[in-house]
Image (tube, rainbow, N blue to C red):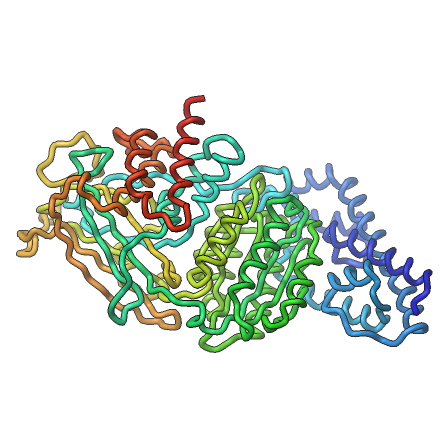
Length: 630
């Protein structure tokens, strides 16, 4: 039996290891002032001045890290010697996270060989990830490219990409509107969190109208043929500007029952840094992963990678019939340290590749508050990594958590490039929606690189405006370019887009973008099709999840001059959601809408509400109206 002294040393070793992990230390040698000076020599004059000013603080920080790690190593060395003498070797822990967890609880002696080999694996991981961590960038102290950096705890708040509302385009000069589809829903959950928890209106940049629209399921009807989705279009009077028309483009993905899903190889990539130490962050992450586990079969596989100052494989790829082992790994996780997300992503992708299932679902599920402040932190670098790995068949889903340091812009970008989706989890109910009710859509991609192109008939339409999708716009020639990346649709997902249309021959005060007449070219000549009653033609391109060549679908659409009062309930509800988004953004295109008008329109479309999300939306409208009057 292990001695009392050995138990004490075990606890001491664990404490020192955890301390070293929290401060993000991965070096075993102290960083001298000479090393600091050498590093400064490679930076610009401004960086030198800042480093000189901060050098004493930084050296003290490094000295404390080194002292903690050396104390931990000494304790573990003594532990290893005593353990080797008193007990046989036990099963090898997976990594340093299990070393500290086992040492803290001390259910059995840990042999020196296991400890040494575990430490060697940690060093090996650090060597593999080294290229992502430039030595010339002091941790958390870079001024250059600040807009591309993750923000540390309390150092800048939430980060959103700037959005400028799409303007009206003149059909005579711009007859084509092209964009990539989007099934992300993170913006809606963020808006809800601002309204119901933070108690104030969201910043306009946080409101992406397409994500508000696509938060809800719509009854568009299941596809009947071999294509993985069906199109549904409706045209009616625009409620906020009655002299205009409103066209709703709807796409319904083919539903898939859980038992029909292909086998899954999932890697949970979990942020356990210090900023995750809040009730609505790491505890909610654990609960979300437990909910997702209820949707997986016994032959599906799950691995868990965590990252703080360094990354570690807490649970190797494990069949889901071993629920006890998976839950135990989740239970052991605690928050602490800086956030080296780039290191974690690389290790997660490698773990997914090592356990790749041909023809299966191979996906990394990243759960984080988006606070990347160590190692590879630039949006471009992480997005390029996600895009490259997606080509290998390993896709990325991103789940955001918490407020205050949420790098929304970065998480949206890497999910887009990683052939995945982006949701924000603010409550356990939202976790259940994304990971239980919509598990198939979250995990299984039924079509990739899905693009939409609308051609407007100049005889029917003078101008148009796409509502939302500002960061999803594509050039007209991108539509036929199969090398151009676009969005993915998951099983059962619906996609909704709205166009506000200025009919031909209608007098309107709407500002329309135009250019001077061309000097060297004549005006386009109308074709015979322009004389038809077609308002527009909807064109869709998509690829199979494992394909490289796109397929084209076309749907000509006529305007039956339907008044808004005769519109379907789904059309009315979508119009209400878009109006709500324009009010929150204080958009110049909001027209005559108001919170009262939005509430009235939405109520008619909220009758068929299986899970209560539309009724919740009505409460959000009332709350936004109240906050707007303060």
